Length: 121
Image (tube, rainbow, N blue to C red; front, side, top):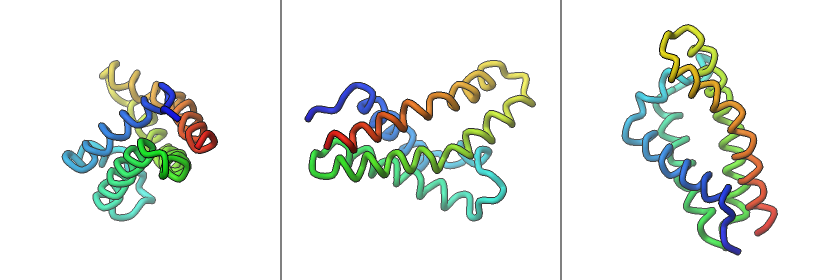
C-alpha cells in the first residue's frame, strides 16, 4: 500500500517538526503548559517521537503501529496547541495569531490520516 496524500502530509509535518524540536527546542518552550515538568526534555522526546512515527509510517511492516503512535502524539501535543492559541490572543502579530488558531482544527484531519494509515495496514 502506498501512503495516501493526507498521510504523506503527516509524515512531512512530523519530519519537519521533529527536526525543529531537536535543533531549536526553544521554539516550543512557550507552548509548554505549566503542568508539564521538564519542558526541554519533553520537547526533545516529542521531537524524537515525531521522527520515529514519520519513518515508521514509511515502512509497510511498521506502518500500523506508527499510524497509531502518530495519532497518540497528535492528541498528546494538542494541549500545547491550545495554549499557543490562547497566548496568541494577547499579541498584536496577526500572522502568529492566525497560525495559532489554524493549528487547532488541523489536528483533527491529521489524526484521521494517521488512523487511516493504521487501519489500512
